[in-house]
Image 1: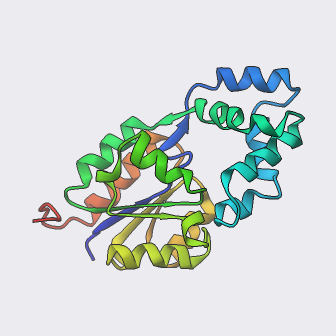
Image 2: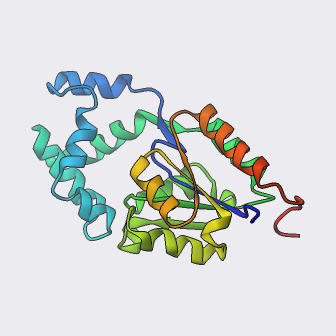
Image 3: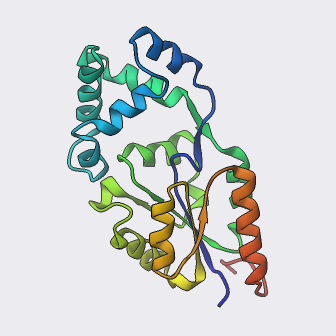
Length: 211
């Protein structure tokens, strides 16, 4: 069956670490290992709840601040530092923009609602996605099959005609178990090559999806 859609993750795929100098300086000053701020966030008792929309981002980052020994009032500074290390994967975005006239596109992300702001307001990528499914807005996250199934339903495309791209192999494995083609993201070049191979092996008569 021809491929009709591509579902892609946000963090560490479309939004990748690029310049971590300021963050590393902060971590050194606070006796944190490299990557320590991100580790503290993922270990917070509120991390899972924030990604399911049960607590807000401020609650999460105040807890992170307290955990690393800074004032909870500095939580916005921690958010800014964390984001300063990341940037848009412009090569991958350009690749998907070339494909989007011919394939439906969806974003499926385990994240707080802030991701929608990044995608729509900071990076102005609303045009790239037909569907955006964010765990904090849905109350369900990968690898729960429900998050994938909601995305497919909103795309109105069957699993067998969909490519799923993610940096987490467990999430890719779930997509494959549901019948999707899976691409594990390691590098931008590798991911684009793997997607191209899948599209070429499932060739169909290409015409823009909206015509």
